[in-house]
Amino acid sequence: MAKGHWIGHITVKNPDAYERYKAANAAAFARFGGRFIVRGGRFQCLVGHAREHHVVIEFDSYDAALACYNSPEYREAQKLQTESSENDIIVIEGV
Image (tube, rainbow, N blue to C red):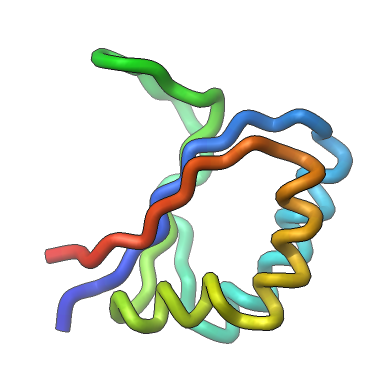
């Protein structure tokens, strides 16, 4: 079965609130088996425009990735995300 991934591109507006968001989203990721593959780090934008932070979170399946995003646990954390940062997030099936 193909893995599922979240790919996020983030601009932090409020660092303190963003740290609270990161702590709050841990419950959803633990429940659905989310594992960070990329969390920050150096990058170069070679084409187009980039936000300042990037994450890739791997799940055992595409369905698990979507279920995590739509879960009550993540919806609670997402309130902090909205106030702390601007985000582009996709859920994508891997190979």
